[in-house]
Length: 244
Image 1 (cartoon, rainbow, N blue to C red):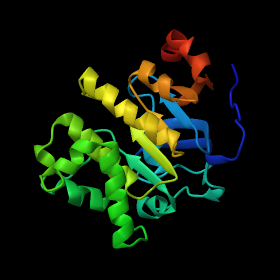
Image 2: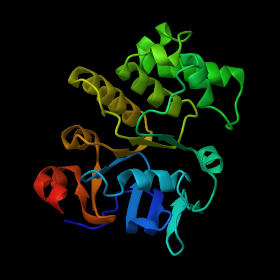
Image 3: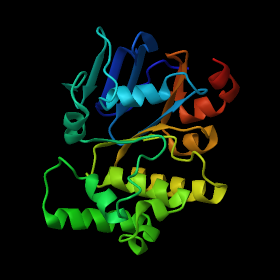
């Protein structure tokens, strides 16, 4: 199995020897991960191995330690603020959704465009695209986000991430806590997002669903990449993938 398979085209995102953590605790121990334009890459592994920390480090929520590099479209982004990184075209849909329950659905979506250039017409086009992907949200635009079901809140979180029309969409556990029928709906939407050209970096507890969407993947264990390969390769090695 290859350690760093390179598909055709350029890397959109590249991490080399990235280390990061919280206070004195190191979580990522020199991680190499790369994502090419138009593909979906999945991060697999047991809870607590560093998958969420990796996404948070890319988006600037966690600052990387010295020594590694993070590049987006060839530009170093390590150490930039989350706002500056988002403005470059990276949208991060966090674990737990992170919606604002007291605001309306429309206002939550509007926050997805904060700091990005555009007109009222562009905002409306983005709203229309999100509502085409998740029709239930159109019916709920004036409702408070807190009144939505768990599945609808996840759709809102993904929709908010899409409002800026990102180059790279990062998703952390989009199926967490959802009933199987809602998981199927969310992944159907993700397949459509990918088919329309958005590059996706995905953390997902359900390896089956993740590998149905992914082109390639990396398996993390104790803050390091222990396995990588195509989705088919990883599908055939799920036990090794989770035991490391």
